[in-house]
Length: 194
Image (cartoon, rainbow, N blue to C red; front, top):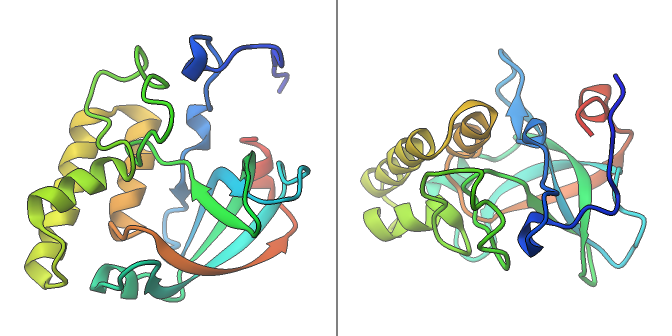
């Protein structure tokens, strides 16, 4: 397949037309419940990080707090391809998820999506945590996940909706889970979407 790239295009965040591709939302393969695939930003001092892949394994812990949602991720894996570089002293991974938060660029999705994009940092899950609370009990965890599913369904269609629902189902609506990682050869399924 031939793709035409305009490397001089200005980012949507700065008023231009360049955006991430919808085909780069996270996904899982039917029948394979313990491994997912995704794209995003790798925080790294290495300027040549884009196009490289890492196998992330979830530890079952959260960065700031550990809930049952984090524990449910233990031993799940995510094959992650870097498509952007963030600046950091050590490797960090920021998964591209529709509804996952827009960070520094609140105008990046204007005109693309008409639904709720959620909080600047943390997106729809942060909104759901505000609604259901942060306690680690079955009721709150279930309410946060149901809220995220509802918000994903209301805010997106097509591939962006599937990517948002990946956050609810595969990632168990767990915010900022800890991972271990190692660099691997990129699988063809990610190369084809890059």
